[in-house]
Image 1 (tube, helix red, strand yellow):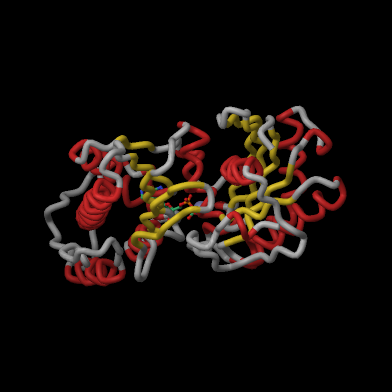
Image 2 (cartoon, rainbow, N blue to C red; image 1 turned 90 degrees about the horizontal axis):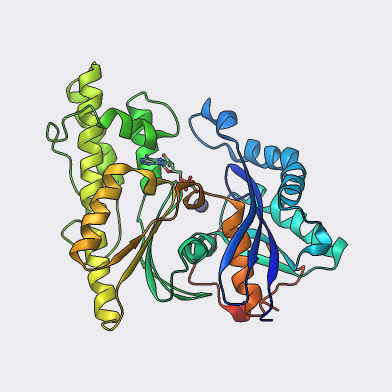
Length: 354
Ligand code: KG4
Ligand code: ZN
């Protein structure tokens, strides 16, 4: 199993219909041969969030074409592939079923092995594709659906160090934007308004900041933001900018403090290793949060790795790569593997595979 492999990856767990072809060289290096993503943003924007049923239908409508485009761009045929990988969860179950079932059909028709990929593991392993990061490392995943610190010690070896007890960070940005009458997705909108605002004007809480644990909580902040907005209603553009800036500052402080604590824990757990800190997920695109994380990493003597935004957000290459890493270790799955709406990253042992 130590030859070069060529893996097709399929991602349909949220609102991106994506397929990619990735090569894994015998020395463990990865190469993206093609990476095609169709975002459904326009379909969902009018509803202010992802509508699961619409998402599943759009995946059905577009996935075949996206897979074909990924193969064409790579200049390969199904027969050239080593295996077919698809996200099997966690995610919106209708969409996951579309991608996983398509992967099973391709695998059955071509006789190629199937690899069921955990979407979170795909995010977690992306830094090895882009930057060849060695195990172990600490990952902060901050997206619309997840806010987690994960210790990544190997393929299928992940330990959850902290998570959100209510909203994900991207979700908190989206809700803040909605509350202030801004567009969807909210993160970029809030960031744009925050750039013009006064971050000291509204005193917003930093939930759990003083606690030792590495968990997040953003719902109290959301309530505080609503009360602050109500206190100055009707809100002017200046108010919106100041509210966005104050909100962004609060979440940046929270993420920075938690990251510092997580890196300290990493340092204690691996005293002989230069700490490596990988940040993934759509929120990693936020400049203020990025700057704060750079400062935290520098302070801790850690190396900060942030894959390019297109690979931090949902895409097929990360799924193909996770598939390639598992394939290299001999892990493939049977056709009875199920789509899972929930699937903790800690539950991805290689022995799961048949
Ligand atoms: O990883 P992602 O593209 O999709 C998944 O959730 O899987 O993340 C999308 C989330 C959205 O909640 C969006 O508002 C947030 O990332 N986001 C941002 C920024 N760009 C995207 N949040 C804060 N600042 C940004 N610049
Ligand atoms: Zn994702």
